[in-house]
Amino acid sequence: MQDIVHSTAVERDDDANKWEAQLRKGCLEMAVLMALCAGRSYGLGVLRVLESDSNLVLSEGTIYPILNRLRQEGMVTSEWVEAEAGHSRRYYSLTRKGRERAVRMARIWLDFAAGLNRLAQPLVQEKEESA
Image (cartoon, rainbow, N blue to C red):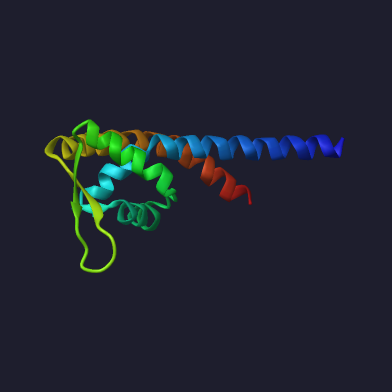
C-alpha cells in the first residue's frame, strides 16, 4: 500500500512538472520579445537574458526557431554583424510591430497574473499558517 501512495505522490509531482514545463513553453514568445525590448541582441545573448532575468533556461535549439518564426512574422529583423575576432553573429531587433506585440502581451500577462495571484495567495497563506 505504501508503494502505491508513494507512486501517486511521484505522479502528482510529475504532473506539476509537466504543467510547469507547458506554462514556460507558452510564455517563450512573450519572453523573447521582452528580452529584445532593451535593444538588439544575438541568440545566445537572448538566452542569457532569459536565464538571468526570468529563470527560463533554454537550449540554442529552442531559441533559434522562435527567433526565425518571429522574423518571418515581421516581429523582429536580423542582420549579420562581422566580428573583429571570431565568427560573425546574427543580431535580432524588434520591429515596431514586434514592440507593439510585446507591449500587448505584457499588459495581458500582468492582468492575467494579477488575477491568478489573487486566487493563489490565500492558498499560500493557508499553507504557511498551518506549517
